[in-house]
Every structure is written in structure tokens, then in C-alpha cells.
Image (tube, rainbow, N blue to C red; front, side):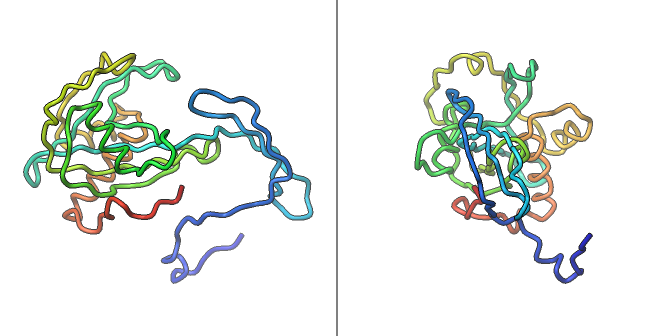
Length: 214
């Protein structure tokens, strides 16, 4: 077992890395994701190992925030999620399913389509890989401020047609996460990151076009 020195630990950062894939097969292809089976050479000189995962286009989410300093509120929306058979409180989010689309443009579209709002101030709040042992899905959470109504009510369909909305104080949203009342990964991570960023007086946030490992 090898440990980095304290000095080396300061340089910790995830990095793209590739291993030889002896064989790759699309086991199943769906409307949004594919199931892929790779035979990967994890250790040189040893037999490849089988790894199955879903191939996903990625997604964006938005912590839409309003209010004065210390009294910020975030927009939350309630939506049914069939795979987990639960109705979850989430933040606006959507797929990166348009090839070549800028993630910020996708986030702007989702905020308009799901909440009939636009923002004039955008920054990156946090990036994460939703479940790196089972999918390649990356997700970027933006912080959107200086909000205003678009003036257009978007026609919502399917699960989105029954969404409910609430403005929640950021401090209360943090309590909801720590109390185990929220389970959507983008909401949980976005709320934790937003609360931490407020503790730093919003300093150090990355610009909306910051590089992204995806």
C-alpha cells in the first residue's frame, strides 16, 4: 500500500486515464442509454476483466438562487421518478442529448423549460460522475443567479406535467439533506456545494465555460 506524502497530497486531482480494451460490445441500446460490455486489460500480463456499464450522454443541473446575502433561497421541484418508484424533490436538470451543444446552453434551456425562468449570472458550482462504477455519466451543476421570468409558460409533458415547485431557504435545504429527506444526487450535491460556497462568500467559483472532465 502506497501513500502520498503531505506535499504530494496537495496535488490530488482526478485525471482521464485509458486502459487497453480487448473487446467491446453494445449489449443493449435504448432511447437514452446503451449497455456496454468491455473486456479491459486492468493489469498488464493478466487476462482482461469484464466490465458492464451504461453509456450516457451526460447531464446538467441548476441551483437557481434568489434572495439577499444570508437569506438565499433555491428553487426546488417535485417530480415522480419511476426507476426508484418515488416522488423526489430535485433541482432543474436535463440531458446533454443534443450533439455538440454547450452545457451552459443546455442548462439555460432546462431552467426555461422547467421553471419559466432565465438568469443573467451563471457559474459552475460542482462537477461529478453520477456512479463511475456503473455508468460514464458526467453531471455539471451550475449556480444561476439574477433570475427573472421568461414571460413564457412552457408546455410540460409526462412526469413534468405534474411537477410542484417551492422556494426553499438554503439553510433549510441543507437540513433536509442532512436529515435524509432528499435523495436526488444533483440536488444533494448541489445544495451541499452551494452552502459551502456561501461560507466562502461565493469566492473561487469557476466560470460557466470552465473545462470539464467528460
